[in-house]
Length: 135
Ligand code: NI
Image 1 (cartoon, rainbow, N blue to C red):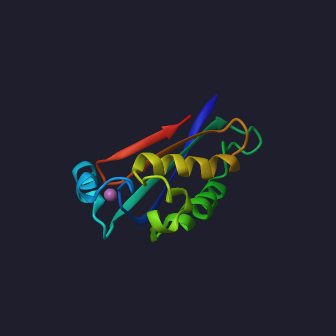
Image 2 (image 1 turned 120 degrees about the vertical axis):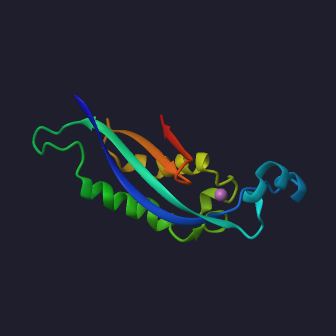
């Protein structure tokens, strides 16, 4: 039987949604306030879900301390108080929308999970707007 364990985390980050190959007018038309050249911030809420079999020895799907540290090292350390466009390499050529951010986070975490563990990432950009990604 598979069980899903989840861990919540948080980071603050700034971003700007724009395409370098578009004019300011076009960027403003498509991305509105999010295209502000002076950037803006979000309080991102992250939920990492790991689904897998319960280990009969420990009774755990995954040690939550390990998951907590993994999120801290792989995600918070790279994102918290950062300007995503300028300071996170993955977004040097990728628009840092919530949709793209969840995929980047998924790719950072997945290699560290045990084989057979299924990963789902949920990211709240605002309390009402959130995106979810899993393969
Ligand atoms: Ni934004």
